[in-house]
Length: 598
Image 1 (spheres, rainbow, N blue to C red):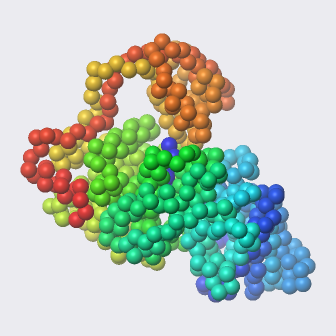
Image 2: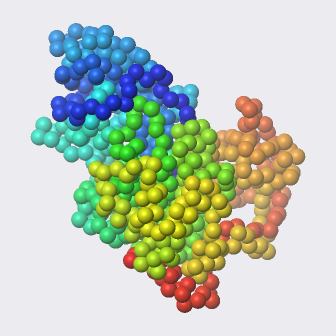
Image 3: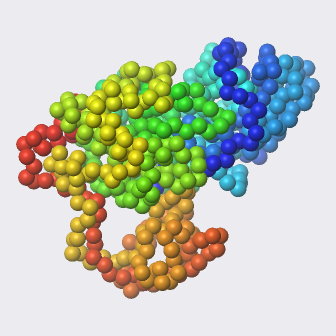
C-alpha cells in the first residue's frame, strides 16, 4: 500500500486458530446494490451443513496490506440468522467482530446490513478510504473485508457472489464469473484480495508480456478516462515486464476512483485500487498515477509470490504482524523506481532526487526505529507513527542491498535477480517460514549479507550512502551550502500517524510557544488536512520576506496560535547525490550494470 504524502485487538475471541479440513460447499453471498439510499450494504449469505465448529460468524479485525486495525464489526447495523422456513434463530454479538449462532445446524440464511466506512463516523481507527467501502448514487466501492464475514472454520471455503445493481453500470474487478453469472473466489482471503468498483465507469484494455491489463475508472465529473491513464502507464508496464522477465499473472486490473479526496492506493495480488482527488487531466496527474501504479503493480511479486506463512492464510481475527514488511513494501517501493530507471522512463537525476526525498523522510521520524521493529509493531499506535518510513527507509535499504549484491557477485546478480529467483522458488501457493527468511536469504546469496541484515534491517545503524553509492561513482553529500538566499518560515512539518506534525522550528517560533511534535492544524486560519495541503503549499510558495503568518497547533487537546515572520536564510541542499565526473573505470562499469537489467 502506498499512502499519499492502532493497537486495539478485537475484544474476547471465542474461536481458536484451528486447522479445519477445507470446506467444499460454497458460501453464496448476495448483495443488493439497487437499494443504496441509507449507505448500507444489504447482505444475504446462503449456507448449509454448519456445525458447532462454525458457530461464530466472524467479521474482519484487519486485512492484508493495511497494517491497521479496522474492526469491521463496528459497521454492522443488523444481523440475523434464519432456518430453512425463514424463521429467525437466536444470535448473540459476543465481541466487536463476532456473532454467535445459537443453532448453527439449522441455519440456512444469514442476513445483515453493514454501513459503508467512508461516511460512517467512528471515534478511532478509521479504515483508510482506499481500503474501505462507499455507496453513492452512481457508483459503489467494495473492499471484501468491509462487506463480508465468514463462519468460523470456513475461511477456506469457496465463495460465490451475486451482485444486484443497475443494468447500465459497469463492473471492474479481477474476479471471474461462473456459468450463473456469479463472481467466484477460491476462499475468503481471495474475496478480500479482490476489490470491486462498479457504476458509471470507463474501461480500457491492453496486453503486456502476455498478461491482460484492464483499467476501470470512476471520475466524478468525467474529467479522467481509463484510456488516458492506460496510455500514460504503457511504458511503465512494459518496463515492469522486462524487469521481472515475465509477468507472474495472466490478468491484472487497475481500479481508479477520482472524487473529492486524496488517500492513495491499496495493492492486491491481481489488482490495485486508487482513491485520488479529481482534477483536470494533465500529464502531471497521469505521471503521478503511473508512479503510484508502478509501486502497486510490483506487488504481483511481493507478497503474491514471496510471502511468509503469516500472509498465506491471513488471521482476520487478531492482527498478526510480519517482520518482513521491509520486503513487502520497502523492496516494492525500490523496485517501482528501479524498473523505471532501467526502463529509461526515469532519468538518473530524477532517480537520485527520489533517494533524496526518502532520506529526508527517514530523518524526520525516529532514526533508531529499525525496519524489523517497524514490521513487528505496525499494528500499534507507536508503529503507526513510524509507518510511512517503510516506503522511505525500506526502499533506501533495498537500494543499498542491491548495490551490495552486485558488488559481491562482480556485477552478475543484484536484488532484482534474487527476488526473481525467490519468486520461482516459492510462488503464490508456497510460503516461506517467517522466522527463517533472513537465514534463507543469506544462504541464497552471500555470507556477508547476514551482516548487512543485522546492521540495517534488524538494527537501525546509519545507512552507508557515501560508501555504497561511491562504488558507483556517485557522491553523496549530507549538506551543500548553495549561497542562495530564500524566504523561510523557520519550520518543517511531516505527515505522521495521519496528521501533520511540526518536525523542526526556528528559535523565534519556539519563543512564540511552539514545540516540535505539535500537531499543525491550521495556517492563517485555513485547516491543514490531506485535502487542503496542496493548496496551502501553493500559498507557502508565494511568501515573501517580511510576510507575517499565523500557525495553529494542537497539543494535549488544546489549540495554540502563534504568529511568525518570513525571514531570509541561505538555501542548504540536504542529502544530495552527484555523479562524479572523475569516476574510475571500475566505478563506471558497476554503475552501468546497476542502471540496466542483467
